[in-house]
Image 1 (cartoon, rainbow, N blue to C red):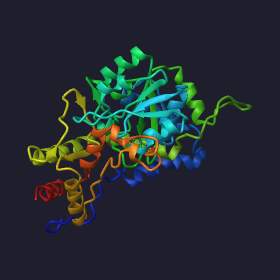
Image 2 (cartoon, rainbow, N blue to C red):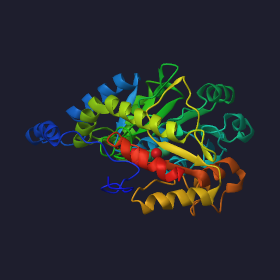
Image 3 (cartoon, rainbow, N blue to C red):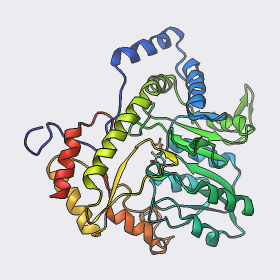
Image 4 (cartoon, rainbow, N blue to C red):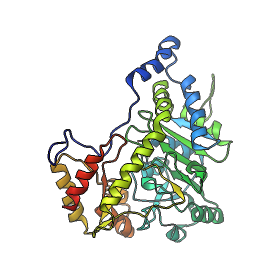
Length: 369
Ligand SMILES: *Cc1c(COP(=O)(O)O)cnc(C)c1O
């Protein structure tokens, strides 16, 4: 760092990588077996290790998180309407729509930006079949209230847990809530397998269904029983995942220390809001969202000022999904005013294990200035 500029551009995240030699050692056997994909040795190992790490007995791997979510929804045999949040990544709603289902947008709560469980019931109709909430930024949804509503109305709950890898609520692995949860192992996530994803699920009977759906619906050499897709994770991905899983706890610890540093410097400052940390949640510190309540201009000014110093925060999530060009004609984004407001005020600051504490200090200095 020289003066008030980092030596190289700082992005919002940076993929963690194992030492190259470790990965090379790991993939050497693949040259011997020539078994590169289609549920090989590493696929099996990775899957077992993840069940252990996430404390979930049922888990299926996928080529990426989006395919995992799309096929999990397909496996549930849903129809009609699915209630979800507009404050998420495109994938969440796209997975619903690509299943031929109708998304119904529920507003978020202004405290932790997860789906507002108190509004859910007012959106349930005779056509509703499921709820797809998002543990956004790793803030765990009001899982108890959502379970209660879903039980009373006989709805499935499929969590988009893309941001919540390794988290726990009251000591319970986050993948144990709802009927199923999707995790993303994309290179930009806290834990990654280059691209990759998994679904954890409650009903063990779903295992062969998910397996079939990710493998074209093939059930035998001469039989195809369902309209599946190609959602298989390959051996190179699984090898990366196995190596990164060994390091993820240390990385989360480093992220936690940096997140605390941000909070210490920026909390209590007028115009800057953080979600309170919930002591019942074990966090993974996936993101560092900060809300500037001086409205959009202020958020955009901070974004531009940081960018001028080669520090690239993200307006994550802006715009809201119900404002996308592909959806805005069908939905009224004004019906989810909290999501609209937060998306205009939020900025996600750089946070990754190898981020230097001095850069965190610089970012805080620039914001406070
Ligand atoms: C990353 C992400 C996804 C999609 O995961 P991929 O692995 O990139 O396909 C879905 N939902 C949310 C909220 C995400 O952040």
